[in-house]
Length: 291
Image (cartoon, rainbow, N blue to C red; front, top):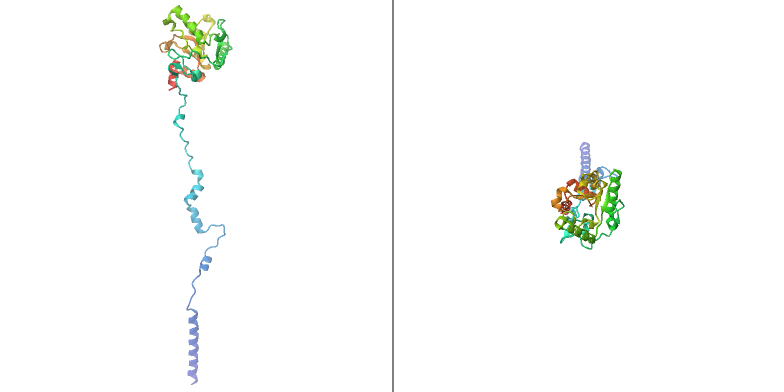
């Protein structure tokens, strides 16, 4: 009887132990969010996380615009308005046959274009050069810029052994009336028109022209001056000082005047050099320049 009791006691103990083990494993716990976060690598507060690194590699459009200013192409300069494109001062040469006085040293006077009868430059000064004795008063005067230029020309000519003197510079409208009428009375109008300008049509009235001559031709105004050393020097160097030989032999039909190697017209160094290089009459040059 003692044996079964022992067996019963052992069975009861075994049953009780099994029951306790089963209760402890009924509700296993799931990992919490806190545990999951802790499992990820720790980062310093200023160190970007993996998500932030991805954003740095793929910046937004706004970030790209702000971070790449140096690679942007500079905007092209705006095209200037059409009115500012011409580089030459386009102006009319004349209005109803009257010379455009606003052209200053580029003013054009010829047989078709005249100066007003009352026109006289306001800046006339006496040119400090040698003149023939018959050149007195206003006939020694030129516009200031032209006077300074002829002074330089004469000084350099003298240094080169070239003897030149002025014979006539500025002429007023009234003086040209007297001079032209005298030529007409002596040679007839048709002949006079070949070498003298009617009143208002003379370049001398502009204050930009001067006649010069040399001792080699007794200081006369003659075409033979062009064959002298002095005449050749003028033809080769006048443009360097802003002057042109206004009436060339090759352009007599175009200008309407005979060859005058003594008649110098000031138009400024830039334009004188251009006319000399192009070898064309001033009338044609200024017409093309003002187009």
